[in-house]
Image 1 (cartoon, helix red, strand yellow):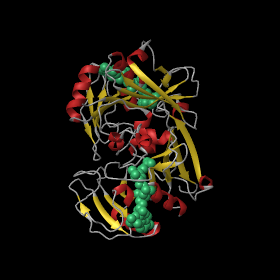
Image 2: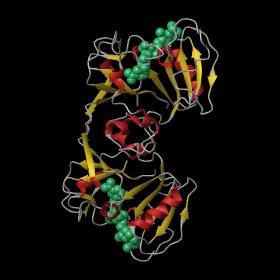
Image 3: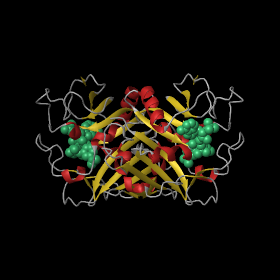
Image 4: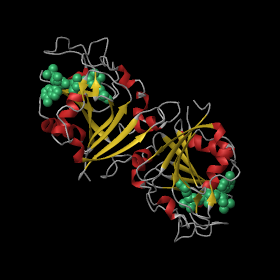
Amino acid sequence: MARVRVHNFNVSLDGYSAGETITLDKPIGEAGALFARFDGRFIHGVDAVDAPITLDRALTSTWGQGIGAEIMGRGKFGPQTGEWADEDWRGWWGDAPPFRTPVVVLTHHRRAPISFENGTSFHFLDATPEDALACAQDLAGDRDIRIGGGPTTVRQFLAADLIDFLHLVTVPVVLGAGVSMWDGLAGVEDRFTVESATSASGLTHQFWNRIGAD
Amino acid sequence: MARVRVHNFNVSLDGYSAGETITLDKPIGEAGALFARFDGRFIHGVDAVDAPITLDRALTSTWGQGIGAEIMGRGKFGPQTGEWADEDWRGWWGDAPPFRTPVVVLTHHRRAPISFENGTSFHFLDATPEDALACAQDLAGDRDIRIGGGPTTVRQFLAADLIDFLHLVTVPVVLGAGVSMWDGLAGVEDRFTVESATSASGLTHQFWNRIGAD
Ligand SMILES: NC(=O)c1ccc[n+]([C@@H]2O[C@H](COP(=O)([O-])OP(=O)(O)OC[C@H]3O[C@@H](n4cnc5c(N)ncnc54)[C@H](OP(=O)(O)O)[C@@H]3O)[C@@H](O)[C@H]2O)c1
Ligand SMILES: NC(=O)c1ccc[n+]([C@@H]2O[C@H](COP(=O)([O-])OP(=O)(O)OC[C@H]3O[C@@H](n4cnc5c(N)ncnc54)[C@H](OP(=O)(O)O)[C@@H]3O)[C@@H](O)[C@H]2O)c1
């Protein structure tokens, strides 16, 4: 049965997962410290890079396993708000976005889909989490769905109890401000089993599995 | 650059990685306790099974990433010793061995190769670790090589300094007897950086990366 999974999701000690303001110059706003220990080269496997395989990197490499589609919020896709003023903007990632599957981009503003040679495509959708998931499942066949963020998007899927697995990474930094991971989710942990392990870099990895998901 | 990797290699607190005697009835000899916590269903990815994704299972899933060939000892392949009395025996795994790549089986006794529909093939070879590795690399293209065990085989590759990465799993059991993981390897840790993390199940995962491998 296909799962809904979140991977490598970074959160600060004070509960923030993104900066408040995203601009073309600052894709992650003031929250750079959240990603300082994240080695994105490993999302495609521990063999993808000629560098030591640490615990952090081994766990990062599970990101794409069996994933058939991602769902992300428009804030992860780019800095524009309101109507799409610039349709030449095709996301932060240039000609080869790392996703390599269809991606549903949640937005209140219509826009035509975009395709890339490496298998990535962006499909812009105004929908509830439930309907967005149904759309992603159509695109994914029987493979799993990744909820890619940002926090505003993950929070909606957690609130709707649609997440089966969450790999959360607590980063030992205090941001003081940002987009909250936990707003409105008091007690959410009751719906999951949670296992924790700390790596040599000081990250704490948590594995949240929804009770009754198996 | 292709790496030589060992994954999910279980060792007891007293340093054993296999039972002393392997028979048709007891593929792992008296060492069953070594594998009691190992969930082999996860070697092909965290999506392969509809079960909670724990730290142990997430790490197990790196086993096949970018692997183009495995090298194993004859003791992992099956219980026969001496000349191959029974060539109908095609390994423990039936018609669909989990490897899905070419596998070099080290043995002093010649035998014709065997192929399976799922991409697995066994190539029997009498060779030094260096020559076996060259053969596996020919079969693997530019993908990584996994040294699959048993301990007699892993020890040879460690002694020859051919291992770039070793994911070792210390299982909290005392076997009292068995095939040693460490015989003749005093000080081998000096050639590696070693990171450790413990999972909720009580396993200790270690990530050995050869110094200078990157
Ligand atoms: N911590 C991590 O590991 C992590 C991971 C991924 C991303 N990020 C960061 O997260 C930041 C973005 O996160 P964010 O929380 O600000 O925004 P976001 O979740 O990416 O996107 C939110 C926006 O998406 C649209 N949207 C969301 N749900 C919708 C729905 N149900 N229907 C229609 N439209 C919907 C709305 O845009 P409109 O109303 O304008 O259409 C909304 O303002 C980026 O800085 C990124 O770098 C962090
Ligand atoms: N702890 C773990 O995670 C783990 C992982 C994998 C397997 N295992 C277990 O390990 C056990 C087998 O391990 P083992 O150490 O007893 O044996 P092994 O390493 O699998 O095989 C040793 C045999 O392979 C042949 N061989 C090895 N090196 C050779 C070379 N350079 N040239 C020619 N032939 C060579 C020899 O057989 P001949 O002289 O008879 O040809 C030798 O007796 C099994 O019970 C298996 O379940 C454990």
